[in-house]
Image (cartoon, rainbow, N blue to C red; front, side):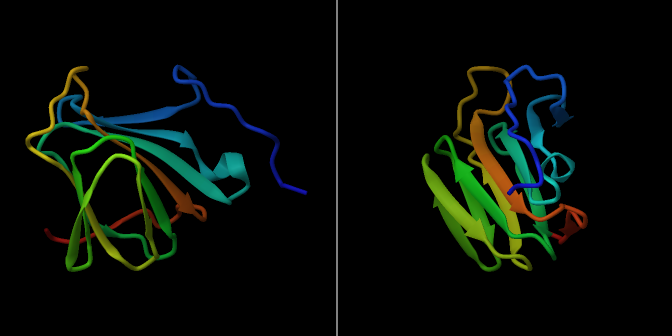
Length: 134
């Protein structure tokens, strides 16, 4: 039996935490936090404007899972870079240096970053990021 009840999060749900950055061109939406899932999972939506990045970082305790909804993102995993096409899933074990970047050629039609990805993290997301110089 699970430690939490079923959860449905709508696109305009007031419980969703949104972090905007780079003058509102990018955002991270925390759709589910560990507190809502009894510490099992955190789930995020990322939108990046053309040429923007999520800085190199390491999740020391949490595995990450990224699902790319649109073309136009590159993911650096330690010393290897992959072009993430739409419908690509990337599983990243804890301790991996990760950097996500949106292609400068990506076109935004909404005013918010057009490169989109969903991210899930196993664990409680307690030690979020240890930033690493680019």
